[in-house]
Structures are given as structure tokens and as C-alpha cells.
Length: 299
Image (cartoon, rainbow, N blue to C red; front, side, top):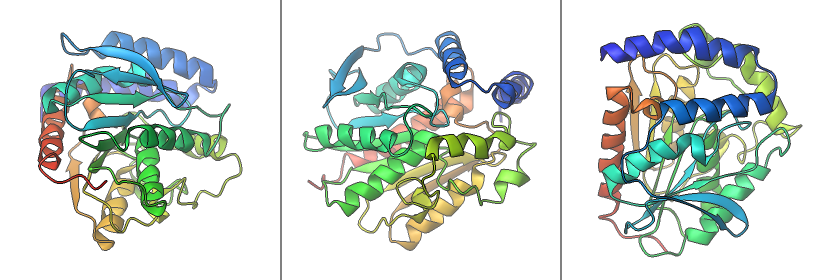
């Protein structure tokens, strides 16, 4: 483990975790996340960004001149913040490493737009891209990880052309928060304040059942899915969401790559500019993506 990992964890515990624990206003959370992303997350030189729409949903295309399968990426942010701008640097890095284009979805955020608005936007974008040559790879982080896994289940249920594969960084997969790590890792988690989790999810669900598979993919069916790649840190409150999701997928015959990293923060590839482990994870994921391109697209 790098020295930077120790320094980053300490900085996040001192600054970011208290900020998330005390800030109630969603607009302020969004504004500060956007400002920090511009300062800390830098895209590789030469990365190309092009705003557009897919069937009315705003998106940001990354390196669209590249060929091959396209990564349809869904950002995290507890369903209430984040945007393609906060995650575009990480996707530009992954796009470069894998040599494929990416497209980031600007889905509707809670509390203004509650479940299932975000999932509907993701599925709208998927339908717009699903028939293109090369196919689609779905990806997301944290809340975005929940959305791409729920979208995968809906794609299978509706018998749409399936994605080549799906990946998720530190996903939340169980909105009932029943995983033991939510309490076990409450102090150890460098970013996420466990005490705010239930409140945030209640605002997003707005009365919907947390066990609904369209909200919590841990309770969905995935028979017939292509490969899935998951990662989480062993000190995260969402650790068990990844572990149980991997077990659930394997029990339904899905090929799963599961990476549990030691003492790395929530969605650590976001910090690829600072963190050697973040760059290494993106390179490893790029290799996995390239291995998918050697298989036949199900269309």
C-alpha cells in the first residue's frame, strides 16, 4: 500500500466525512462536490468531451472518436449529487486505458426526482445505445452502481440485448442497509457517515419499498447475465453490499470478478490523480473490459 493511501484516508476523515455528516442541503452538497471535482480530478491530456442527449436525457460523451464497445457510465453521489462533470476525469482515464469511448448519464437527482426516475433515465440511455456495433458495457459507482445493476436486471427481465459486461465501484446494492459492515465499519470508513445513510435513502425512495429489485439489486434476478466486475474496500460501510452481491450473482450462474482492497476509500479510482492504487485499479478494469471485446455481443 502506498504512503499516499494513508495520507488520503486521513485527509478524507478530517474534511470530507464531517462535511457529509453535517450538510443537510442537497444543493450545497452538489455545489461543493462539483467544485472539489474540478480542483482534484484531472483528465488525461487530450481527452475529448462532448455534451449531448440520448432520447432527451443529457449525457457527456468521452473520446467519442474511439471505436469498440461504449462504456455507459452512471455516477455516484448518494442519489442526490454528482454529475458527468464530477466523474468525467476518471472515465477519461479508463477510456484511454481501455481504448474505448464512454458516455456519462446525467440522470435526475433526488429529492426533486425520487425513485424510479434515475433508473428510468439510465434505461432510456441504454436503449438508445444497445444496438450499436461493439455493444455496451455498463458501469457505475456507489449509488450509480445500484442503478447499473438494477438496470441490468431490468434489461434481462425485458429481454433487451444484454450488455457485454457490467462493472461497479463500491456499489450500494441493498437499500435496506442490512449488511453488517454498515455498523461494523462505521468508524473505519474514511468518507461515508453511516449515521446519514438511512435519512439519505429515505429521501430517494420517497415511500418506495427498499426491497424492490429496481431499488436494491441484491433482490433482483440475473440469470443469463454476462460477466460482472465488482470492487470495494475492506473498511467501507458498503463492503457487505459488494460481497453479498457477488455471492448472489454467482448463485445465479453469473461470472463475477470480485476485488476487495485493503483500507482504500469509497470509490478510490476517483482519486487516480493522487492515488497509485486508483490508477492500478483502472488499468486492471481496462484489461477486463478488453477481455470482453473478444467475445460475441448478444444482440
